[in-house]
Amino acid sequence: MTERKIIHVDMDQFFAAVEQRDSPELRGKPVAVGHDAQRGVVSTASYEARKFGVHSAQSIQMAKRLCPQLIIVQPHFSKYKEVSQQIRAIFQDYTDLIEPLSLDEAFLDVTENKKGIPLAVDIAKEIKQRIKEETRLTASAGVSYCKFLAKIASDYRKPDGLCVIHPDRAQEFIDQLDVTRIWGVGRKTAEKMHRMGIFTGADLRRQSLRHLKDEFGKMGRVFYDFARGIDDRPVITEWERKSCSCEQTFEKDLFEPSQVTIELYHTVIELLRRLEKTQFEGRTLTLKVKFADFQQITRSITVGRILRTKDDILPLAKQLLREVAYSREHPIRLLGLGIGKSSVSHDGEEAEEPRWVQLELEFKELSDTAAEAAAGEATATAPGGVTATP
Image (cartoon, rainbow, N blue to C red; front, side):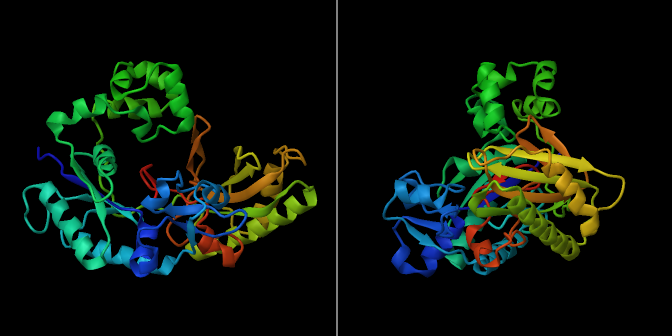
């Protein structure tokens, strides 16, 4: 059986890099892409800004405190999408098996490639060089026999990096890997693993399959396999949409029931607009609430009919909201609603469907003027579970 050759390409500080490329006065300076408002969030930070502790998904206000000389740049999503399409065209010269994860990263299966290049690392070098020549931007690439390791490899030597994890060295590499670098290990899962004495890939590999499944449910099997370098997920060129969602971060926290109900109504109207645009159909409604202290909860309900109209969705949304305890002392920062085909969650941390993510240009907050600038919560969970930070 032919061993797979997988490349993961990840653009370096993508949004910030595009802005620095097009505005010479920004080069070499700490830059954050985002909406400069009280509730604005950093979408991408330049490497100069990251030296001060600025990072994506951080509040703009915190970023300014960490780096007083920080330059805030409003996003230009149409420009980012155009550059992303340029990069995609380069990929297509080598393979049609391309799985985009976001505007700035993708998996490529080059096991059988159009140019007949025998070594995947040579393809990765060519792609990186062409990206630099054609877009004047840098990319990092990871090469391995599976998506799990190719993704990790692309992060290993950023920026402008290239890392190969050969099958013969894979187990050694995984054994020394911090478990927080493993896909599916979020903050809560990492805390639980640490309490179990699991800090590295080697620690994880010492756990039995039964024990991991008892502790982590279906993800236990994933962790068991990843610890052994097993990942048979194919590079998928087309994904079925599994959810449609929207959310709004408020300029001021809400605690009055009348205020919250009005904003919930607005969110329902926006969700209906997106359902019509995407022609998505689902039976599960999920309410997402983030409080002022950043505690986040979700509540879901599944019904026996397709949720298509305001009369279908609004009563259910109000029903879910009644399950949420908020007050003047515990006000609401954000409300979101999503329609999904089903609702699955793991350890209370990550919802499988609907995924609360920003997907390229589709995600807009309810205020159109702030929408593209704020870039939602600035992180995107791509199909297949990889988290993208531009």
